[in-house]
Every structure is written in C-alpha cells, then in structure tokens.
Image 1 (cartoon, helix red, strand yellow):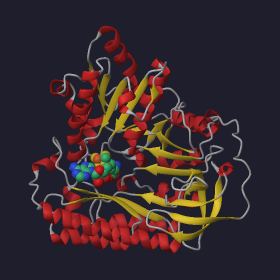
Image 2: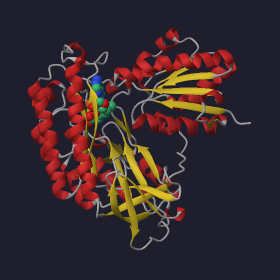
Image 3: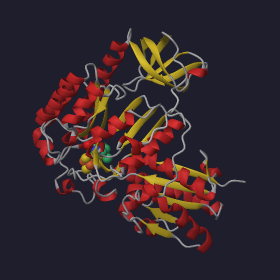
Image 4: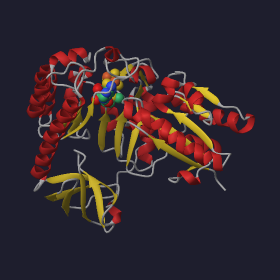
Length: 460
Ligand code: SAM
Ligand code: F3S
C-alpha cells in the first residue's frame, strides 16, 4: 500500500507551487501519494510563510497539533519547509524536537535524501542553504491534472523593500535557464495545459541564460511562451513596477495570449512612504506605467498589493493612497496591515500608527476597491467574454465553470466536453463572487495539437 503525504501550505503562490513540486518529488522517489486528511498521513509537511507575523505565529500551533498525532502514531514523519524554516533553521527543532526535517525553499529538492536519513538512520535533518538553481535541476517534470499550470521562472528577490523578509528567506534573484523554462511549458502543453502563469517574486527582473550564451529578458520570454502551441493564455505573478520596461509595455500590444489583466503592486500612493519603503518609484511614475499599458491594451484591468499603516503613515499619506486607487480604478487588491519583520530595515522604524487607525484605513481601502470591482463586474454584463472552461461548477455540477481574462469565475450551462477549451460566453448576471453567462457562437474544435516545438530551433 502506498504511503500518504499531507502538505499544509501557508502564504503565496510560490509556496503553493513549491508544495506541488514536493509532492511530485516524493511520489517519484518514495511513492508517496497526497492526501487531504492529516490523520491518514504517514508524512506531514508544513510549507511556511514569514511575510507577515500572523502566518508565522500559526506555524507552532499547527506543529503542536501534529505532535499529538505523532504521540499516537510514533512513525509519523514531520517536516517544516518554506520561509520560516529558512529563517529559523535548527531553532525550529529546539522549540519542537519532534520535527524530523527542516528545509528551505531552495533545498526542497533534497527531501528524498533527508527522508532516507530520517527513516534509515533515525537522524533529524536540517538544510536551509541556498544552492541556487540546483533545485530545478533535481525536480521531476511537473504533473498536472487541469488546464492551468504555474511555471516558476525565477527565485528570490534583490529589491530589498525595507519592510520585506523575502530577500533574506528566499535569497537574491536568480533566473532559471530559458531553455528549461520553455521545455517545462512544452511538457505542460502536451499534458493539456492551456493557461500558464509565470511565477516569481519579480518576474520582470527575469534574465534567463540560453544554451548559446544569450540572455533572454522577461518581455522576450513572454513572446516565446506565447508561441508554444497549445498555450493560449498567459499570466504572470508578481512584477515590480521598477522593472516594467518599454518592451514589456509593448508586449501588451503584440501578444494576444497575454491576458487583459495586470497585477502590479504599488504598496502606497504616498511618495514619502514609497521612499521609506525603498520602492524606487513615485506614485506619478506608477500611474504613468499604468496609463501606458492601458494605451496599448484598452480595457485592461489592474490589481495591486497595498500595505496600510507603514511606520509614519499620516492621514495625508493614506489619502494619497486613496487618491491613487481612485485614479487607477482597481479590479482587485491584496491589502495588508503593516507587520514589522525581524531583520528588515523597517523594523528599526517606530511602528507608530495606532491599531484602530490601521484597521479603519484598511477597511476603507478594501471597501473602495470592492466597490470598484463590483462596478467592473456589472459593466461586464452584456459583454461576450473569452472563458477557459476548467470543470464542473462547484455549486451546480450540471453547469460548467471557467474564468475570464480578469480572473472572474463564470458559471454557465454546458457539457463536460468543453473542459480545456476557450469558449465565448455572453455575461448575463454579475453576482458578488462570480458571473453567470450563456454560451454563444461556435463551439471550438478540440485543442490544437502540439507541434514538434524545439526551443533550440528558435535560436538556430
Ligand atoms: N514582488 C512583489 C512586489 O513587487 O511588491 C511583492 C511580493 S511580497 C512577498 C507580497 C506582498 O506581501 C507585498 O506586496 C506586500 O504587500 C506584502 N508584505 C510584504 N512584507 C510585508 C510586511 N512586513 N507587512 C505587511 N505586508 C507585507
Ligand atoms: Fe519583497 Fe519588495 Fe521583493 S515586497 S519580494 S523585497 S519586491
């Protein structure tokens, strides 16, 4: 009988991606199969996040629960990975001695060897080093069971925003070789994937070396990924405004596969706060990038990350953020209360905005963006949207569900044969968390067959 693996993931999409790669790896090396039931597992892994304090606090409470399971079933293997593991290393085992393995985002590929040591030599293992690209060279090709997939194109971050732990926990930026990225995308397309989301902390800082000594930047990479037969929709997460090159702006005119939605984190609309955050741009420069992208892709929608209550944020600073929000008219946001992080420069600044003020500002910001998102949803009624069909609707399995370019869920009557296809849907109703629609036009033929694509040929 195969052994079972349970993974609990905190944090960002990078962590979700890493968790699925851990599952692929342990399946290949030791035959583990993923389970959703922690009580049923032979191994439990916690993929942690330390971007904000709350996520970090949850680590030891989760481990405490797992300890009780291990007390009942002595052979349960417990591993801790991710950014908290990277930051705390061996300290995790001092606080939780029942943990068997501690590994960082850059050493998860060494899990099979660590597991052998635990199982055969009964030795606990800690490896939170930064062996850079070695990680990708040692992971099996990803397995997918849907029409969408993430592809990690770079790791780490070298921007050193004053509030952020990522450069310290994930290391500085390094890009995966271009040929490896393309090979992975081709492999995914061959498994039926139609939509690719390129992942990294700052994907537009991508500088991928090629087999013939060139360096491909992010805008060029987008052209190549979009050219892979079968891949008809392209997203990326996340990009930093400072690396938003002219070539990337031009890509919005030149690459139809690139969705009409851009997540471009601004964090604040106040130049004073942006300088304290060490973001490297002003609010006006940010709006200028937005306007240029909009000129190349009319109708595009935008989302952003915001930090509310950064040290010294005055009412005036916050109003500047609200002003920028009105100017851009965001479709969505990830907004957070500032959380001082150990070892970051901002930790030295007095965390002087009162909790109630922080919460009131966050509530106002979120409700303004929600109103704007609802207006955008309402304005989509009557439009014909291109929807990638993902599978049966969660609420009504007789219906199909898919997503628009701006990531809205759309439910409509249709049969299961449409899964994996792009269909035209007339939007008939906007609900708070989804849209309803009706299939119009011709049903597309089966997805295009994959041509014999060779990244090498492209450079010949
Ligand atoms: N690469 C992205 C960018 O260009 O800004 C950010 C990636 S970061 C891991 C994800 C988000 O977490 C940030 O955009 C920021 O809003 C939030 N974040 C990071 N550090 C934070 C802190 N100390 N307190 C609150 N939010 C934080
Ligand atoms: Fe963090 Fe700034 Fe990089 S938010 S991930 S240091 S761009």
